[in-house]
Length: 412
Image (cartoon, rainbow, N blue to C red):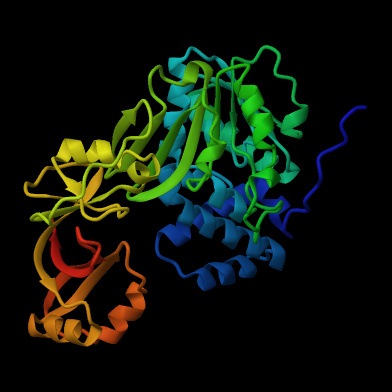
């Protein structure tokens, strides 16, 4: 039985105009206005004055605002691309996608199926690496935006613009394909106001389908950072990726894309630099030790990859407390894999006494971090009623005995 057509999700009113030459020209002007500091209301009034229909003006303004938001993920390229709210939220940062594409390039892949391409981020990175993407997207309107985005990048490179096929990933013939990349949908269908799915069984396409492709060819699967580790196939390399302290994905690599001897990896993008910690498996935690002069907070990618013990050995540090992802040591060791704090003194844990101690030190600006403490930092900061010109960091955690402690610190 032949597969039926993919489900159609109606685009928002006025958004078809964005894909016309006239619409793209008007969007370029609106984007430039916002980048120059114009207020959205002023841009909207100008569009209406020029005779734009209300739905077209709304579409242009929304798209220009999406381009502004997209700069955090795409940099200057954002001002040339088209987005949906859901597509932008789910898209990888272009720096992360370039890392994905580099894997395929290093493995010698020339044609890669981008199954569930969304707005086209992965395929854009593939184009930049000289790979021919075979892009597939279930939602027809999103596929048209992706095709525009790929054509924009291809034109800059002087290469042929790839087509984007509207189809279900499970129906795609992979004959002649060197590799595959899948980003299973983890939200309900739509262009905006989508809902995150709670069960991996609801992913589209399913993990069984994605992992099945991985058993046949070089395959990358992008999943959420909170992936249940029990779902990771034994033959896959699992790589957790963070960008400026925020864990953004778990990437699973199969076949020639999985590096020999590496089962766990933490890839850290920080301040424009990229660093990686790898291991053949989970690293056991080191022993708990008494509090040293420094406290290290491992990057979230290191924590999720369970490489805290390996980081501790590199730092010459021990666990701050059993089961708490803080390390402590006597020497300052620079590392991109953790935030580092110099411990200044131990303060009272009781709230009233803590408030008096902070007031006595003239601390008016306080960063509050916690692990192993059941407290809302924002609510606590408000109750402390801070006044003063000094600033500091307060670490709420447990010591080597398991006892709650409040530590005044400064960032290194």
